[in-house]
Length: 287
Image (tube, rainbow, N blue to C red):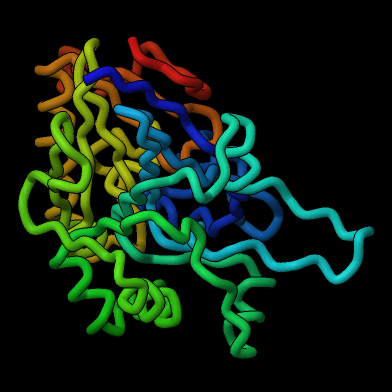
């Protein structure tokens, strides 16, 4: 099956650097990504568009981008570019999306969206004709969450997904809705049942890493985040996935790296994983 992939840019984010790098000393990670005076670092919010057999499939890390943008109260307010704007650059609107693969359902909303949700004015879900695909085990976590990560789920999004009639839960390595050429890895280290989709391409598989490996700096096995549910387990998951990519000549797409969208992975003589052949963005890439 012929398919091509493109990266999509959502709203950029600022998150606490200490949270993103966990036990890594600030003196080290601040050399990788310079924090501002509030200790916040700039991160991307990157999705993947897969076009195959006349279908457009989105892959997203988290559910925050599913909410429609808030309406401007006056024309003088500038709306920051988001996911729909990125789709429009590819000549697509939300009605053109047939499926949305959600690696997990955490949602880190902007302050404006948080305020709207708290006031009972939650925006609608985007992509009104698409099937929403996520892992069955993670769906159970989203509906019955733990105090450790309860704040990362937005119950209004979970309820709307449940009531959409278009929710597809995956419990194996395949999904009929996506067809041939897709398979899933699973990760429990960041959040239970996170989906890690792998897409077959002529030049080798492409894996969307979600929040298992959010960017190039997290290729180091010892670098984890403060939000990881099971950091020790996550290290093993990273190693197995990266070994698979090295062996298969595959590529890794990052959801949060502010500068790099996709890399290939090599392992040096000290058994460190290193990025090479980086791409800052992809546009109908079919290699």
